[in-house]
Length: 570
Image (tube, rainbow, N blue to C red; front, side, top):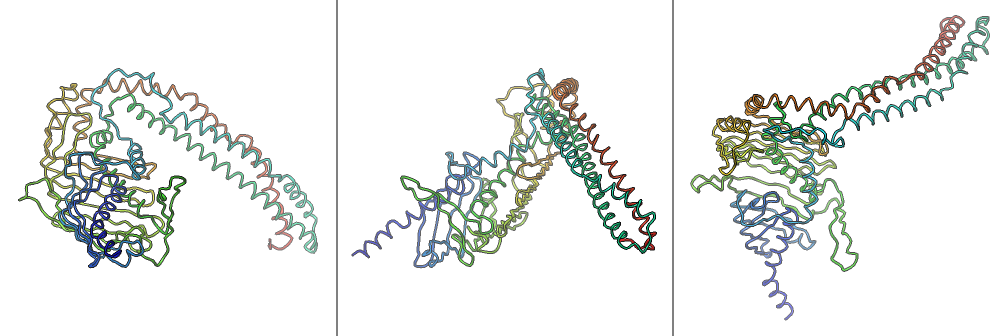
């Protein structure tokens, strides 16, 4: 009777429970809703079938990350007894990316911390804003706290004072006067010595050794002073570069356009490039969160007790199965899902070694998609202690997604073209590249947008006349200090038009900004330069005198010992 009830309960509720667990875990990992139409377990044959999978985008409110018509998996039954999931083979059919949805699928949960970290990373990219007009520049409103020259100058003063104190202490602790006096006195005693005065020669050698050691200490202090001064002088020279950076920051804060080509490219297409790298970084951080490198312990919220629920920590062991392992997945998908059915093309790919414990599996997770005009390859190497994530993708002749231009009521419809995206994160070091080429660019203006300034009208006229578009963006640096550079074939044309209209106003604003920044930090910069100029001072004099006295004593001793020992000197 009990067995019958158990079997009946399993038949009635197993699929429903598995579906709920799949949706809950998937939503927590992705950071957006994961919904399943139907999930069926057939454990007697080791089969799982899933249809109607919809995964919402964690970035876009009304967009899906992917949809899948059907997923079928061959699952190991024995590992389930250890609460582990091992999928030998997965077939995913009808995958579609970037489809529309009716409601916002983003959720709050464990991924919020990753989203916040990635958001801070994008802010550190410091993408300039495209300004098309120069209003009244209120330099008095410039906040010194957003600039760096004053802080760097005061830090340099503190370094100089600290170094001077340390050098004075080092010079005062040398105590080499006695060694120098002993050396000179011993050289005097050797004037009347004979080669047979064995005891005196031994004393002379000991004195010479002491003089050499004292001279080494003096020269070490001298080298430290010289290298320290050189470093501080380099810091003083660097203040000029810091001030130039503050000029650029002040331009952005006060919304004064920059007409140099690097800034123009970043202002036009920097936000679009940052969005691409942001998505790549987000998924890399998600992978590191749920696929930790090495044999690091993994923590998870503990059981939901009323009091002191705590945290459950799992310590992986070598030579055992991972908690989750997908050995091989065969993927069939459509990239241009929005196109008419007759123009849609199906692609195939393979995913190998997706696991929650890469060190136990022992090999990187790899993804490979190869088809005419399309290639995507990615590797997540979390086997070692330092994780290495990399991926690259190229599509030729594909329908490229559109993008909006910042500060302009223009939307780019690039049509068909070539797009390349590569991204690598090794430890905390970043590198990436995004490029777009199209010969069929179309520019759509927002009909409801008002007519802008004269500069904006000219810029719109230049941009909308361009059919061939080339964009190139490069990412480098680290997570804490990233650098993004963007260029396009529009940069010079747009810059020339803005320069023709705004050059006089920008030059006047630039002079005001430079004068304001210079006046804000005149005192700390002068203080830093004066401290650097006076560095060394008495230390140089004292150390130089001690070095010369010891060198003279050493020379006299060595010369007399060579004479007495027939050139043999130890």
